[in-house]
Image (cartoon, rainbow, N blue to C red):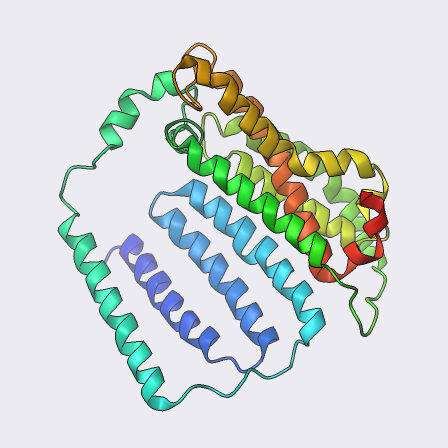
Length: 311
């Protein structure tokens, strides 16, 4: 057995075991911690199948931002509050059987299509020089399938606005102020985040990276800032950050309408495609970071305390 095959086998077995352990947790806090560990292993699995873009996104969104959102939400319901009693044994057996059948069918479909032609892959690579990006992932999400990405940004904006609208203060024990080590860490990491985020946007046109990865990193900085000694960064530039919340979606939509004159929505002329993609990615990275930070702030209870800052 080769080392690569052994690593894949260990990852596969670990994911299955960790999924079962996560489902068997009896308190939300333990389940969230197990889910975050599962996300880290899943990020490694994406890397093993040569999907670095998905690996970066999973590592940042899964155990990172999603974990922070879930932990902030647990402040409201309690970390050690037990889950409701499990369903009856016949129901669980039927659900397990259904999941097993779905897994077998999906595995059979995957094996049947293993040696078949790659569909639109060759066609996508042929038109890559005209797409405005040397990275095929960026070309797909911002050129070939730009509609999907526009809708995803819109859904994220609606989610952030919904969290802001429904946010309520957290009742219970106040959060302890950050210690000296955390303040030092935040002071040292902030410049690094501010350098890496633009780099991730820029490198997305050539290699793994792009708006979603950069936005997730920016939201990580936002979450750290919220947990730091100044727990509400929107106090600094309220109107600017309020505009940044919708900047990505609005600019994306403006570009879509502007490029309509070339034949259809998001149909870039080949000579200008790279510029339009860079503009869209830069604005979307900022909006993704702000939206995710606002969602964390709403779950943690800061939005309701500073709601007047948006008005």
